[in-house]
Image (cartoon, rainbow, N blue to C red; front, side, top):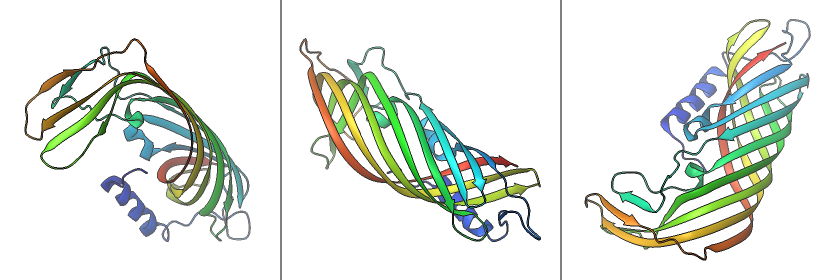
Length: 249
């Protein structure tokens, strides 16, 4: 689950404060504006992870819509020589969230259930393919005290994930005109996913250093017979996010 930062909390508070001041169109009818049928959104909370995710929603009725989404994530850092690691200078606590590249596609349905058609429930099917080539994967060993002990591994990985998102969300317009809207869309929910993971470990080494110790370099030995591991994992997680959307009739 993503850590909640100050930026995200501020946006969520803005949504709650502003929702009463900017009710969204409920649909056609006496005294109401025509509802918007097309929505394009960019997921703001994925951008810090270099994950570019866009979606399109087609509202077929005031209470019903269908969504398509696609995403592409770049790796934070590539290692030309992953066997030489500088401790204390360059970040080395990498995980797949940082070092992997992935592609993401999803399709879903939205049901808007309140009178102003701003609250929704959305089941969504998704598929993600992710890979990382010769990256440094690290994790803590025997944490605690003044000494940091980590396991450093040179890995190649590829994984395919299929799953279901069960989301609830709130939409808020920041600007309104009869034909065009800009706004924020905050959502949260549960993700159920099945992951097939293939990992090749070319070498590993355990190293320790003091918190205030200077820069040191370690070399991870590469084996001629790398270890290959296959895993099938079912996972449940909680997610949340904020989209910036644009809509029109």
